[in-house]
Length: 291
Image (cartoon, rainbow, N blue to C red):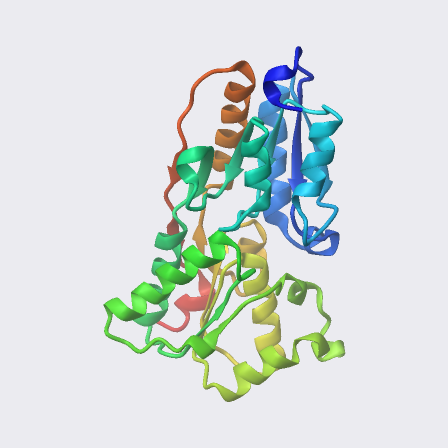
């Protein structure tokens, strides 16, 4: 049912988490982001329904169910991909939505994002500046636009410094589970990663989330390897883990508040523009001790 056929507001917004529940539980970005979204929306008397996507291969199915049942006034879309079926469904059905991140259709909808390319570049340049040349890029999901942008910026730092970029040192996947692995398990689920770290002469790591970076630090300690590690996000765990994590800080609170305010404007039928937030390198012990 198209948005134009609806007659009244429900004061409800759907925030549908893309990744499976065990990933969600080890990924603090979402809890920080959602708490600020909820706080901002509640001030306007709007409440949030949070759930998980029903199908990995058909993520738009969950959205279709919400639309057919006329449950909410709009959607907050996370985990953007270049070929994103959710966006096509929402655009085709004239739904109100705001995305966290953007793809090549960005002129067709309202988005809020951080400068992921810049973040990847800053991480790469920092590791190069302290002498790293064979850096493992521990990236996220391969189709994620965030992963693609952070890869692009990271690679740019090497090319700008006339250094070779080894594609075999780029790995994709969900490495957040590393953070809850106990050394007694010998990190058995990460044999391929252990193989790369041991045999590829890795001298630095850029992990595109803090949780993956901290998990990698645990694995490196298990392997008795001491090399620089940089993360991305600057969640509280980055400041309390030992060693404290050098990371690319994105303003999660500001991004969340901006998303919520744009969603409110959408519901009220007001105009708004998309918004990009800058990032910054925060240097801590996980790289400072190598300077």
